[in-house]
Amino acid sequence: MDVEGKPGRSGPINPAALGTPLTVRIESRPAAQIVHLAGTVAIHQSDELREQLRSVLTPSTPNLVLNLRDLEFVSSMGIAAIVAAHNDARNRGGRAALVSPRPAIAKLLSITRVDRLIPVYPSLEAALDALPQGG
Amino acid sequence: MRIPEDFDVSEARMRTMVVPSDLRAAKVPEDRIIDELGRWSYDPDSVFAIKLALEEALTNAVKHGNKNDRAKQVVVSFSIDPQRAIIMVRDEGPGFRPDCVPDCTADENLERPNGRGIMLIHAYMTKVRFNETGNELWMLKENPAAAVRSTPPPSGRR
Figure 1 (cartoon, rainbow over the protein chains, first blue to last red):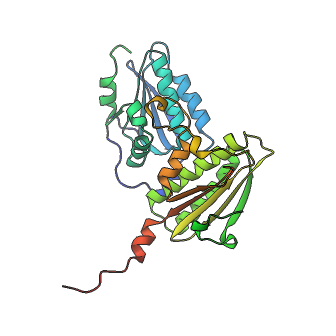
Figure 2: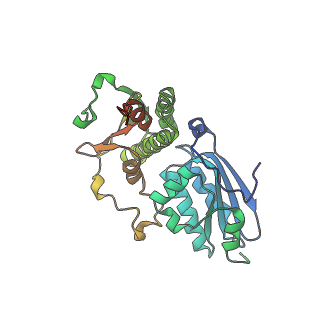
Figure 3: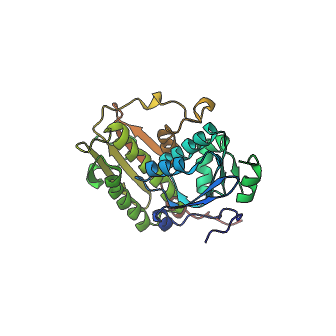
């Protein structure tokens, strides 16, 4: 279902896809916890997402990689959850990274300058390579 | 309802929905408006922009205006046609000064999780107006596809 390392999809968003339910899949790697976000973060789901991202980090794996390749929509509340996760990772001595946002999400990250706070990579491999080795 | 003059729409054309201060309830008018945009074949970028601005407005109304008090209501009025989408969101809170919201893109504020909503509404909508107290927000988005359709073809040939 999720092929790692593929770049984000290009082209316009399908408006119908903006109603696709959010799925959150967590993948543990030695270097980082990878969270694959897909679909739409609905207006009432941001607090829940924030808690999920907060709970994913462990003392032995403080690095967090958010795979945004299949994320269709997120508002500022979802962005807030991502920034809070970045702050959590940093406070635990780790780092956060974003991977393959679609053009609309990349624009959102750029307008808010969140892409200056959290580095964005074109692939999971590139993000994992950039993280400190050994977690 | 005090419609901003430059929005050029009559109250009779506005449809109104009232929901309690709850983000799940706020999804009902949001879904209705998104359906309307689909019906008028708004382009994907415009749908994304309007959905984003509307969610920012609804979140502000529920969380900051009405402080999540379900006894208080959020009023959503809208008028959507092929040329433009006009949306009003009003809460029962005391309002705020939009010009006093800190710049969320300033280096010192980047790590603050919240505070990006108002800036995004301005960034994605064509016109944005608040009433004097700040508890009523009007937003207008022009449909670029309609502008293209209404542009007359070049006249004459060389």
